[in-house]
Length: 157
Image (tube, rainbow, N blue to C red; front, side, top):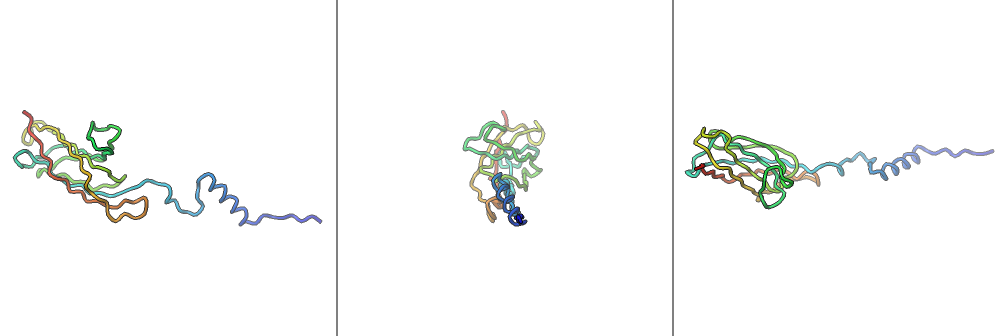
């Protein structure tokens, strides 16, 4: 009499686990290998004129600069993050999260013309002296409170 050897559920599960592992899918339930690094940050700064007076109503564009040279916005080394306006006290601030920042580029542009104290030239500042704290694991870099030095804008002639 022939005996038929049946495969146990454990053997079948092992075969499927091996098959899934070969195509890159984990059976452990941990998806922490796949994802994107993230971080949280808070950015706060102030825009002033040459006399130290706050300048309201200016556009402030924040971006992640991937090299040392500020360039044209939306080049291959710049990733835009957010666009804000300075308040009555010249202050701008944002709390956000996403891909960790390398260098923060801040571009200031006068979008209201003669209003709010006259027309001002554009200004750009790149800062990199901030650190992320309390990062947990390879995918969360932590939180950074970035206090930007005052950005001085000059009036157009």
